[in-house]
Length: 213
Length: 280
Ligand SMILES: Nc1ncnc2c1ncn2[C@@H]1O[C@H](COP(=O)(O)OP(=O)(O)O)[C@@H](O)[C@H]1O
Ligand SMILES: [Mg+2]
Image 1: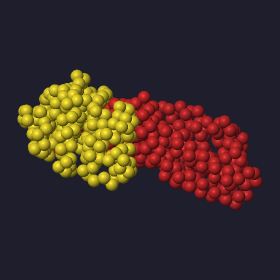
Image 2 (image 1 turned 90 degrees about the vertical axis):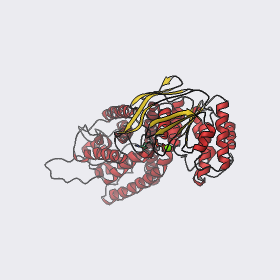
Image 3 (image 1 turned 90 degrees about the horizontal axis):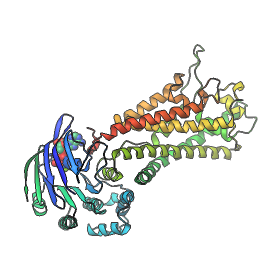
Image 4 (image 1 turned 120 degrees about the horizontal axis):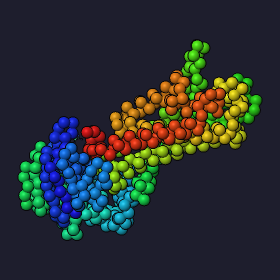
């Protein structure tokens, strides 16, 4: 699934949070947004998901322009900002609830995904007793369980230990191998240079550098 | 299909929030019935057996219209207000509760903003309906435990206490009463959608204040145009000559609900889903 942004600007209460961003991300690649805090990485991910509507310009996902009240991209998995879940349910139940809408992922798929991110599918604890790192893993599991063609992940390595970071690398490269496009945002240059095929650097909402990793 | 799957998820969470309120309201209405029962006996009006209709009447009578020039100072019908206010806000939430994590994942999985908005509206209706039915059912159950007969007709004692003149007891027919209860349910559902739309346009607190104020206006201002009038049995044609027609209430509720749904949808379609509960 390819993603194209064409002169996208977004102003919120008069302030530019995205400033004339034009970029192209080919299918089956891993792209990274990088830049300091507040540079607009999360906003850019939201715009690609269709959650943020540009003031100017257009966002084209898989050849279709996202517009007000258009459908969201059909095959997309996302983890934007924080891994927030229903805290009174177990991790498995949370994923089951989410999966019940599209019915693409079966129980076995959910269990397998949980194992892949290093969580126990039979864990009876509620999400409220999860550590931040466990929530992050669950967030990644929620994004990938339906094997979407487009993955949008914000700060994938947040709160993760060394094994967690390795898990992220495995999950991303596996997604690319199976033909999905992975777009992630991170201020961690290490992980960006190790994982991304193409890197976009943002500053104050504007694209300041684009290049191969 | 996806609409119904999203609705299942939403309705479940609405009901989960509404259950404690339903319990509260059931206890409240049971207490109300008991108090009024005692007052009827005290006034020596309770010659006949009370009916299930009486129990529902207690919940919905509100306050009779104030007649100008008579110098009557109307007391706010506190019991009625508690019931209506709880009904309106127990099962209601914002356009989207939580813009990060699960909230936005559910929205995107749902497919489009419009579908999501419709799901939220229908979930509100489901919530109000379930809450209403629980409260009515438990009121009737409490009534029957106190010896009420399973009859929708309303007894003379209850009518006198509600302030209806005896001449008007007669027109209180069973089928008309049933239509009235249905119109109350419809109007509550419509107002919950109005509140949802207002919270989409402004803030949640604002929406609560506005809707409650509009409903309360009907207590002091007799007008067929105020939605509150259709929520009080004491203002309906079931109880007084020239009162509001329950059937008109049904139509009015439909119009209020549809307009609110439309305005909310137009606003939500252009809505940015950004974090922190802030709006853009
Ligand atoms: N809910 C919001 N409302 C208005 N402005 C916001 C909101 N969230 C973030 N911003 C602003 O948008 C800009 C970009 O934020 P963001 O994309 O979150 O940065 P980051 O690169 O750290 O992810 C920042 O200047 C921030 O202040
Ligand atoms: Mg960010």
